[in-house]
Image 1 (cartoon, rainbow, N blue to C red):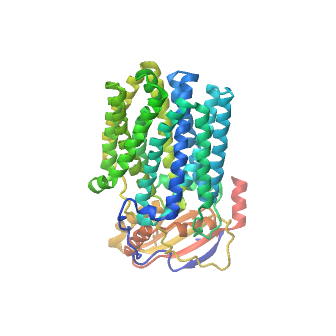
Image 2 (cartoon, one colour):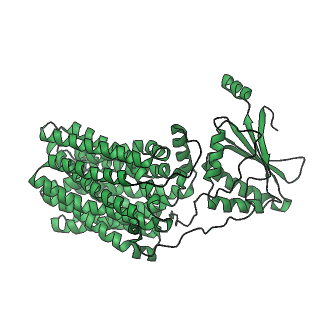
Image 3 (tube, rainbow, N blue to C red):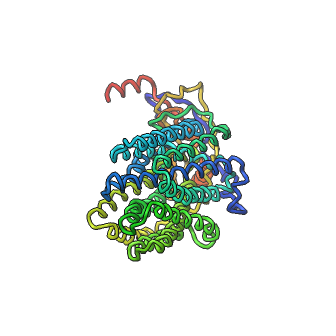
Length: 557
C-alpha cells in the first residue's frame, strides 16, 4: 500500500540477474618495493618519513622532559596517554571530515598547525616556562592534530598506488614509520644530550613542514562520486553503522584491542625503565627506542617472506607472543645491552602485528567509508594504547615498573591465545563499486532532501525455495543496513502463495541514491544468489513520504 505517500516510480528490478563480471582479487605485487614505482607514493612516503622522525624526536623529548618536571610514574605514562586520548575522542569526527572534504587540503592545514605547535613548545622550554600541566596540554593538542590527520593520511594510500600494490604500500608505510622510529629517537637522544629539548621541538617543526611541501606538490585524482555531499553528523553515524554491521571489521578491532592494550605497557614505561631501572642517560634511552625501530625495519624486510608461509591471523598471534616474551625479558634480565636486543625483538613483533591489522582493516572497507572505518579502527588502537598506558602507569606507581611489565606480558600472552580463533579477513573480498543498480524511474526529479523514502521489492518464490530464500534475504538485509537502510522487514502475502514483499527505509532521496553507489562487487554477487532463489527478479517501487504526512509526524512527535 502507498496510502499517505506518493509513488516516486517503479521499475522491473533493482537487483542483478546474474553474477557481475570482474575478478574478486588482484594478483599479488611482484615485489614488496613495487609501490615506489609510483612517483606520488615515493615522494609522500619520503616526506612523511622525515616528518615522523621529527615527531619521534618530539615525543622522546617530551617523555624525557616529564621525568625531570615530575618523576611520578603516572605523570610520565600520562605523556603517552595525552598523545593518544585525542585520537580516541576525535578519530571518528576526523574520519567523517576526511570523507567529506578534500583530504589533501585537510592534511596541509593540520600539518601546518602541528609545525606551529612545535615552535610554541620550543619557545616555552627555551623561556623555562614549561610545566607538567602545560606539557600535557601541548601533548594533547599534538594528539588532536594526529587524530585529524591519521584517517585522512591512511585513506589516501589507495589513491597513490594501483590496487595490486596496496598491501605492499601499507607494509612500506609501516616500514617508514619504523625507520622514523629508529632514526628519530636516536637523533632525539643525541639532540637532548648536546643541545636540549627546545632544539628537538624546533627540528620537529622543520620536519613537519617537509610533509606540508609534499602535500602541496601532490595532485590527487578527482573524486568519482557526483552525488550531493553527505552532512557531517549523518556521515559519522553512517561510518559507525558500517563498522557495526561489517563482521570483518569486528574481527579486526577485537584482535587490535587485545594486542594494543597490553603492548602499550613498554611504550608508556620505557622512560622510567631507562632512568630508574637501567639507570641510563638520554642518549642510551634514544638508542633503546632506536632498537625498537631497527627491529621493526628488519621485520618489514622479512614480512613478505613470512606472509607467504603464515596467514595474517597466525602472524598476529606470533607477534603478540613475541611481544610478551620481550616485555618479560626486559624485567627479568635488566641489563642495558640485553634491553636493546629485547626491544629489537619487540619492534619486529610490533610491525608484524601492526601491518597485518592495518591491511585487514583497509581491505575490509569500501572506498566510500574508508576514512570513517579506519577512524573507528584508530579509535580502538589509540583508545587501547591510552587506556593501557594509564593502567600500567598506575600499576607501576604502586608495585613498580617490573611488576607492571610482567603483568602486561602475562595478560598479552593469555589474551592472544584466547582470541587466536578469531580469524582476520584475508583481503579477498572485492569491495570496488559495482554500480549495478539502475537509476530509479521517477515521474519527475525528487528533491534530494525529501524523505523518508520507502523502497519495496515484490518477490515471487517457489514453495520449495521459501526457507532458503528467506534465510538469504535476512542475510542480505545486513548489507542493506550497513549501507544506510533502516526499518527493514519482509512480509508474505496471505492471499498470493509465494509472494513476498521486502521493504526498507532511507532517510532521504539523496541517501537512497548513495545506497546505489555503495553496492560492491561482492554485494552484487550476493544479490545474484538471492535472485536465483526467486522465480524472477523482483518488482521494485520507490515511495516518498508526502509533505502532509511528514508535518503530521513532526507535530505528533
